[in-house]
Image (cartoon, rainbow, N blue to C red; front, side):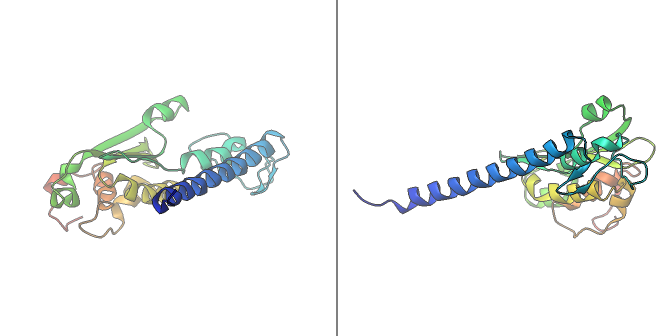
Length: 199
């Protein structure tokens, strides 16, 4: 019987990912259990709902949901299909369930210079913002490199940026992540009228 290095490596990698998944699940379960005890103290710090503590409520949610909601709304997900599907934050439907009025824009990839250079314009980048304030609530993307741009969107949501803040950021030209800026600009401009570097 010969030793197959490729099978061994594949099994080892699968075992590592399974172990990591179990560890992350346990960490989340412990934190969520702590919250459900009502003590307000978690391994991540005090999340007590007493008015004397400073609190940050996300997307108009009650303060007691803040910790869980921050985890849920800033955890990106990627499905590695061709093209990739990536999401972070709230969709329009999820925002509606939370009684948040939204304003959204969808930018087709044929408006993103990197996609044009790659000769692959399959997909879109969609931004979901809170109506009135413009605060970014969610991003969904279908693109060949959607998994590469979704973390920038997660950071923008975590930083409570508005679509106007995102539109004013400097992004390197000819990158897929530049599509986030272009999508944000669609809230106030017709991006098809812009030159390559006019952003």
